[in-house]
Length: 393
Image (cartoon, rainbow, N blue to C red; front, side):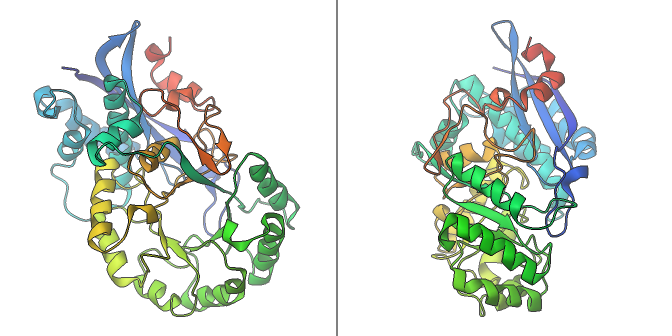
């Protein structure tokens, strides 16, 4: 039986001098977690690696004070499944002991970073890529050999006006093989944002290939005003117009705007997802959901969310996770979701999937390296080697 001998965490700053309608990313950090096992292969310990997604903050304190000690203090025999090996689902339940219901917030990202690192370890121990392990565990062995991805960008760059940089950025994504794009709105005036939007539409040629994201900034009046201006373009989706927990705003906006909506990246539990589907007026055949397992307790909670979707008449194919990271790409393939976000040029060292993953006609076939493969991402490898040098020696 493989045992966990050490867990390490490090806060790493994003390389992102950009902003959306509300947030400056230049000060943001990410918690990287390494779960070190006593299994040694080729003179190196087998290590599980994960992080808490992109665009929030590290949860170092909670990880070091609560969740990591619970894992390390547990009886090793209490961490295994029926096969006698480390079970990520069992670990997730154990580290959540003595936590009150509700209060998800930052806690959900801390648990996610730890749980996903355990999944990476479990897949490496099994000698399979994570998506194959997830397919066997949750999806009767079925998986998608490739995943549709879209390039998310179009942020606001401090000190720069106009559309030249925006168009050049979006053109670069198309040249990399992406067929669908997403850009930010709400960080400028309505007229300026429409000018930016039209510049990108001229590039992509069809509104169904472009989505927009307001990052929850708008009140109802502003959300409706943007919707009225954008509706003729037939956009792929209109994302997070208002606060993600304001289900009444979303429901009322849906009475004024007919094309698809997308939301839920800032919902951190299956209970929140259930409330969204019951009260926000979303349409199961039209709208999209974007829960990010790296922000919402990890893969076990994602499976619970998918159960809620099915109960409410939704298909998992309506889920396109937020985050633009390799962890969610595996989840999209192994649980047969509707696609995945990508940050191909931003949010380093975490954004994107690594050069071993080529985008062809807007889709990616995931490498069959055991685990998630984070250590094979060139930008991230130095960070991981600093955290667990013995695994990279």
